[in-house]
Amino acid sequence: MTIVVNMRTGVDPRKIRIAARFILNGKLVAFPTETVYGLGADALNPDAVKRIFEAKGRPPDNPLIIHIADFRDLKRVARDIPKEAKLLAEKFWPGPLTMVLPKADEVPPVTTGGLDTVAVRMPAHPIALALIKASTPVAAPSANISGKPSPTSADHVVDDFYGRIEVIIDGGETNIGVESTVIDLSSERPMLLRPGGLPLEEIEATIGPVEIHPAVKGKTVDMARAPGMKYRHYSPNAQVIVVEGPSNRVRRKIEELVREYRSMGYRVGVMAREEISADEFYFLGKTPADVARNLFKALRELDKRGVDVIIAEGIEEKGIGLAVMNRLKKASGYRVVKA
Image 1 (cartoon, one colour):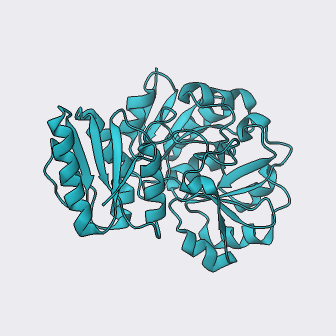
Image 2 (cartoon, helix red, strand yellow; image 1 turned 180 degrees about the vertical axis):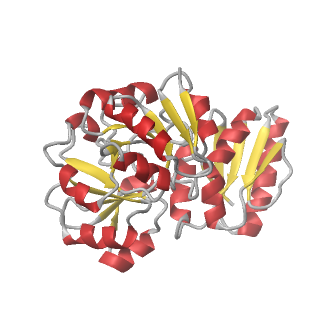
């Protein structure tokens, strides 16, 4: 039995206390953040954390992010915190930034995928912060079946986990729509491990140049230092094709691909920033922020409409566009067509 708790109108302290008790008792609670919904458990309870991996079907070497609600809690889960982490936390926490740091002894190996580092962030959502403050540091990957598009509404979580976890907190749709940016600060040179809701440009303006891990651009890695690096992610049931290039040529190429796949008997969906004729169409919005907010919702919705192929319009890889294209390329298995 799964309890769905309605908090669309804001934080309800009584309901938060009830959900926090589930966390403290080793149970699973899905909750909204500003990025996507998270599937939370007590980060310091190895048995509870194991349930996250079991529920998601997540490989055990894919590390989780610990969510905290107070900067003082960072010292509880991490050690040897560099000045860059303090600068970034002062400017961007609460917010869509995850920092990878040396792990504190209190954090069990299962939470970090066996690594000696830990990924930590402070979410900018009142429900998430209230839940963490009322319980404990919370380990929370995205609340979806492993490999599938991340959830941006409680309905998405219900689709994946109803009857499999104890509590789903419905806080409405998330604001950003793609996961947090992950930056590794555990070694001498800062490195971007996953682009996300905080643009790389803003991080570099704060701490200087940041290297980009090859996995961000699609190189296969043997060891994941952060979520989303090693395994297939964000994929709907339908085949996904990404089209990138100058906007006037992208439209023509998408129309060409629609005709080609329909001629072969496929049911074709298109997700783009202007309407294009297809069996099914999903409007992503005009701005890169709109596209990010609607990205996972579009993939899930077109799947529900029963398309065989999804053709997605690519956007420029700057600002939040870098995160959007990272997710789209992973969703497509790096099947990218140049217009």
